[in-house]
Amino acid sequence: GIICKDCEEVVSLRPSTCTSAICHQCHTTRIERRETILEIFQTELNYGRDLKILLVEFYGPIKEAGLINNQQLTELFLNLEELVDVNENFIEQLNRVLNSSPLHNDKEVDCVNIGQLFQESIHMFKAFEKYCVKQSDAMDLLEKLETENDILRAFLQVTQAENTTVRRMSLKSFLMVPVQRVMKYPLLLNRLYKSTPQHHRDSIPLHESLVGLERILEEINAKIQGTNTLRLTRKRSELRRHSSSDKFELIKTALGHLNWSQEEIHDILVSSLLTTQPQDHFWTGKKVSNLKFSQIHAVLLTRGEPQPKSSITKKLLFTQQSPIQQAALVTLRCKGSRYQLVREPLFLDKCVITLNSELSENIFEVQDWNKETYLFKGEDDKETKRWVEHLKRLSRNLGVFWRRRNALPDINSNSKG
Image 1: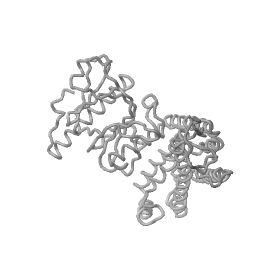
Image 2: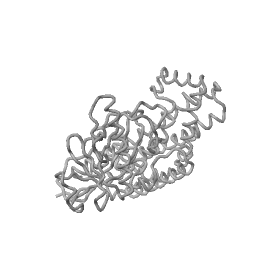
Image 3: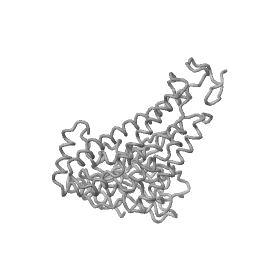
Image 4: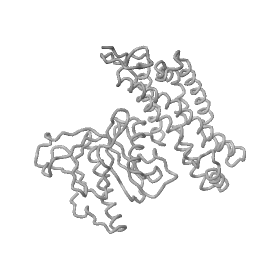
């Protein structure tokens, strides 16, 4: 047999352009590594393109026309020019790393070291920090200016509708781009780390860069929470198992399965829960210890009238009182580097929520119209009760909504919970 170059297992020889044999599984992993490296490069180019659109199509014309004063201009666009410079420099370094490989025809870019590059470029996240900490204030200012400044509002509307360069995106959308980008880096690095062999010289730098990035994001979040502005995460104690990039990807995945748009979302709650599905409806008479729970990622989303002036990151608080039309509980599990549905989304207008307080530990039951029953519990009683509070409130409110709109029976009206 032949020893696989990556996993060092004995395998059959596979025809390959490589000088050493690799097994089929490692070959697939190499392809994923290559695709992730190219995605890092391409998305960085796309991010830089959007920064320049923001600079050229919005910042420049607004400044030249004097639509707002210099102080407002600075508070709205923050350190945009610094971010552009940082992006251009990082793209230059990415190009250098990709082109410095001794194997220019190496389709699997095996000799490229992205982890080391991130270690060398860690200072660029200071620019992101400056932007993220004040970004919520910038959004509030934009909302105020659009309300009070008729000329600015007209310019933004015409630009969005007629300037093909901006792809019908609003200024608000472009201002969110740096926040979205900084949350994407750990996700991409984590995927690259998982597809990099342990003995690869970039494996340790990738892991160190990933840990460093998560720490930086936590520091940014701490400063954001300290200024009582935009929050990239919920309270650390409530979401201690999810990084900023994790939450962003979970929400994005959930929205994809629901076919809901970001503008329709009013509130978001993301957390880890334990879940099981009992085999019969007499589970309450049995010992809880006999039930086998597994950990999943739970995303609770509410849907209402489109809100073009509200971003996802400002909906992670569950404090808004807007009319809700739909609410859904989406359960996800991580498979490889992606999130997959555990079961079909549970729509709360078709569910009964019950908390059994007689048990030694708090477990809540979600029963849908199909009589399927699912049990959930949080990491502690406080977390469980928090979920029950939101789920019950939403299911009751939605019962009223659907009874009024669609003449459907309110199954919650006869529920003790």
